[in-house]
Amino acid sequence: MIYQLNKDYFVRALSESDLEGAYPGWFEDQEVCRYNSHGKFFQAREYFREYLNDSNRKDRIVWAICHVVDGHIGNVSLQDISLINRTAEFAILLGDKRHWGKGVGTLVGRKLLEHGFEKLGLERIHCGTAATNKGMKKLAATLGMSLEGTRRKHLFLEGARVDMLEYGILRTEFEENAAP
Image (cartoon, one colour):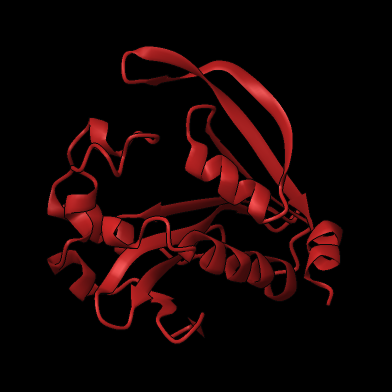
């Protein structure tokens, strides 16, 4: 276990056993992948094995989000980590729909931002999402991220062009929000 988030949830590194569970199926679930590109091209088990083997390196951290009873329910990551610019992209996939709407994204998101700023020395963490993705827009705002811009008609989702919204948070903003 990397971090215990509360009595029900924790994060840990992805493991080989995750490949035998529900994890690969999340990428075939069109509702889970509604706002990303994962469900457009189906992947063989070898794709997931390669991802697992390459999941934690200097430019990427991937954590398995786990529930004490249900096990591995999603992934959260910092991607494209730049140790020169001290920036990273935040990404999350909650594959087990039984845990949607329970605040898991907020719990794990805050911990990953804290890890990025305090352990990795990052200065800025950002994310992008479809303008139609209400859940991710709400999560970004809850995490203290500011809307920084719009990439017009950047995404092709469900047969239509959709704007992508860019959010970001600076270390100083995170520290101000985290202060008691």
